[in-house]
Amino acid sequence: MTLVENPGDLVQSTVLSTVSVLALDCGTAPESGLMTLSLVSRLYPQLLVVLVNGRLSQGEIAEAYRRGACDYLSQQVEPELTIERIESLCSRATPIEEGLTQ
Image (cartoon, rainbow, N blue to C red; front, side, top):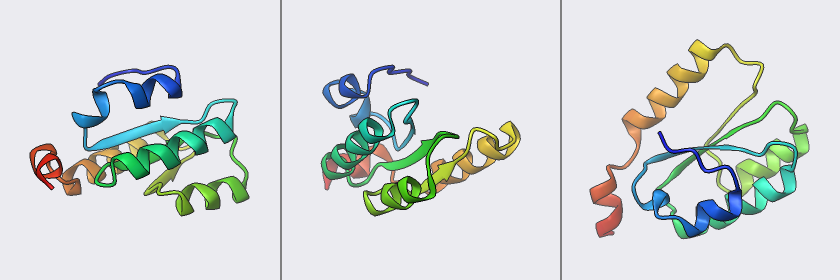
């Protein structure tokens, strides 16, 4: 697992070319997170992006899906369920090698 605290740093780092699933926490700045989601989805279309945040409104969640999120996990969800859902996404994600050759 790699932790990138600033969404702007995420796009400039090499970590996105080495992962199949990204858990993106919008934190206290949902619009910044949605902008990052749009950019990541455009640059890495094979990457599965899961938003993790308990503070998004229903409209912001809907916008996240429109911008390419494949799932949304509220911070109020039980940790076991969060792990199960992330593992499920990992099992169906495009292997990194395949994503890089396309």
